[in-house]
Length: 314
Image (cartoon, rainbow, N blue to C red; front, side, top):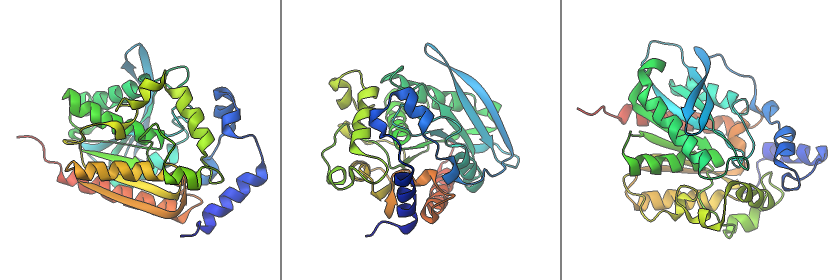
């Protein structure tokens, strides 16, 4: 499959703009240098947007709550932004969260988890779990049905959504209805064919992923912890149904698909789609990529089906 012409145009524009490689920057420089908002398109109106802070161990974090038009209570998606656990924020995924709110007709709670290297593993994962638990426990106050709470995210955010699903299963404090994993990071390894094929020249590079992982982990041992590398989990049974989307020209392609396969083998219901001509980050680019817009339609339909299939306990 060839690289999608729209994706190639974006890569050509980025190359023409020049600029240093991510892995040569400090975290502060990287956070200041990346702005993909022009590729996201115009933000849609939703019923209501509210910024709040919620408690986590050792402090508090910000969340942004998007509520659709209508009566409710609505199902909810707890969303974790990508950016290698180092960059990204609530504004980065504002347009995607609005699209999901309207298309899936659900509340979207976007989570501003604390980031590495200032806050290394397991803090981002623990913050992400705390946010999902907060939504489940405070559902009535934000017009949400506590029995229909999903988690999702892109890239490192997909990693966090998968980790939260594992944590929720292991701890039994609340239930998750669905996990939406968009080109997720699932393993601390750089040895897959997709890393060899797509490790440079397609937006996300192997060098950048090494840089991200080095900032995130405290030590090599953390890299085999299932809450950092969900693919390393010995048991994936009992997890919520999943949607896994990958991109053909993405170094993370194979580990995302390997995780989907492991979930299927464990008896978890999984829908997996590879967007063949796409690059990493296409989900953030619906304003510039037709396939980006298409992926939102698929994600929203998967969410709606999962919410419809979730029956409250008797």
